[in-house]
Image 1 (spheres, rainbow, N blue to C red):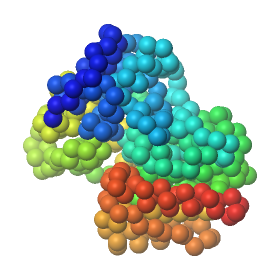
Image 2 (spheres, rainbow, N blue to C red):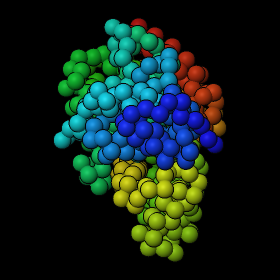
Image 3 (spheres, rainbow, N blue to C red):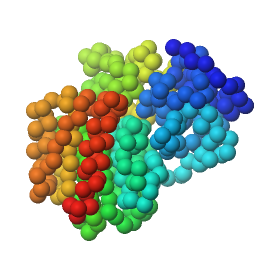
Image 4 (cartoon, rainbow, N blue to C red):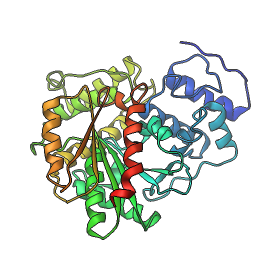
Length: 365
């Protein structure tokens, strides 16, 4: 695939364009073409922002990928403008609080909680379709080196809650969690309820409570990570655990990286240290999920599952969720699988379900 750069601009624009070209495997890019429309995905976008920081010394915020709901936001032209005007902010010394994903009106805000792996880019299409009058914020995971190797999910929830209430000390709170984020959001909602705060909505999107506590071996984790990485990046691939058992850990990680490069999931200069940081966070989140049990009472719970999922597993998950609320759980199905349900053409149905839930949430309280 080849696109044309419509204008050859200054050194900043050329530098950002080269980052796009390298990550997306293109000869040239149109400076007005959106990163995601050109084939970019989730963690690839995170790599893109990291490259901009490394190249120019400024940090373009994740919110730049979400804003301008009615136009393309993540273009070379737009991001170059942010770098030129130095609108990117320096990385803080400590993990940041809620990230603005979209500005809204005067209605109560919505908070999106990260899945395993910690990034928020998976919410990008959904955010654009939520009610325009509601500001939308995201809660990204703290970096892997700021949390224990085997964190408790309740600790992750308390970390987010401290930053959430610091930035937004009064409710009401509406929480949307995808995958692991649903479990974290539930723990947050329970803690908020215990503190006397008002939680209007807890929406768990394709979120499955753990059924077993036993941790898989390192090769199984690495194999699962490879599969997850490929799906998140939109370039599915797998590295069987049996193949990895024949290798040392370092060689196994190198095998995953080589395979990811072959299918175009990561760029050619992605190194083992980057992959290891993603794996560390994935492993920590997997541990937290496996050892957590839903136990804090919550209210106003909405469950949304992907229609391609296992209906038996969904029934078991719904039963687990029902045990922590006195109200009947409202359960919905959205076309697609765990990942595609948050993208076109299915994300519109998910947004409609959540929009209706948000519209009625105040009445529940």
